[in-house]
Length: 269
Length: 268
Image (cartoon, rainbow over the protein chains, first blue to last red):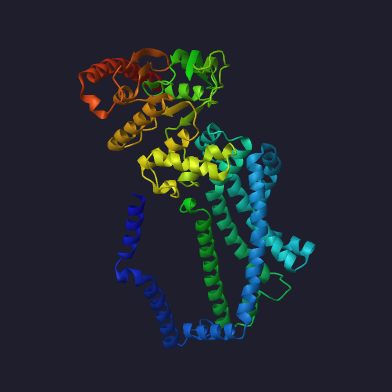
């Protein structure tokens, strides 16, 4: 029964006609073609809007001279650092709050006050305290990602299906086993949803912090600002494309990891 | 195990005087018998089973659970010698079939190898061999029922409590599961309490049918089902079955009408 349904699903996918499957590529190629055409025919100055072919040329140059790979990997490491710190703390605090009413009550006013605060507004204060180095970038991105992770984890723990808890107790689970073997696994879809939100804001905040006050002169945010200031529009576009593809790869990879860790949770939340 | 329920009362807190859900239930559920609890929706039959299973605490009354083989032994606590099969199954979606079935053994600290061996045996005995590694979401409704049944049976408790487990199944799967339960009961002779709102199911499965009244739940009548075992679905065509069906239908119809009147009054 189960097998036939999976077979059916894959078949239905491959039965999509060819033209429907190539449509995404057609859409991109057509868009780039029109862009190229308009720039050439109307003779748009490259400082306003460079042609895709020019952007591609600069992109290849910047990859070849090693500058893009270097700045991208710096940004990547900062994102991972901020995300890991935020996830570990967010999940841990979320679980503590979900399990202990005392912890929840103690933390509640702080979360209520800090969560809605735009974290970018903390940048001046953080720069005063931490300077403009790596600690500052890590802190601002981790603080921002911490809240969605914490709140989703807490909600997931609180909303665990009561029926499952009763069933576990009936099968002899003690209080600790119920928490570890039922409540936490039941919260995983919600925790994953929080981690996705957290990853999204980490990317945003790392790039923003590299733009504002990052003193290390590295990272994609720094590149974008620098190219923008000297109006090297081709390079700005090249960096943007890299950043967009990079973000997409990170999110897709995260979805892959989710499915690998918890296939049963796929599609929930 | 014999289950003696005496003057059981359950009041739900509604902020005011409370709602009387069970009003003085007294009954002896016979050891190694399959007793069906039948009644209109909201009559408290699920509550009664959950109290006997130690999942809910009763407001008043006593429950004694004793082994007829060892007279004089102290009564077991509700839930101590029983296991529940739930209306919505409550399978753990993050565990595959074998880890669902082995859950109770895992909680009891049984070593991995042993608990897998026992779970495997039980999975095979409910007809799910080779499905051990499947995720529950990949299974059909009937197969999920079998997983839940195996998860309860592997606990090896003398009492099995079943709260409308087959209510959500399609008609044909239901017949197969009823036959499965009949087979297991006739093989193991556990003490089974089976909650249902289907009259034919109650007669087909039960040694005894306890008909309950609309809220507050009381026992309206207890009907012995003396149909011979082993039983099969063909029994439904026999004149004895028809007679029992008519008698219970008559009792139930009164109570369903009562329940509807109550609802209308509450709404009006």
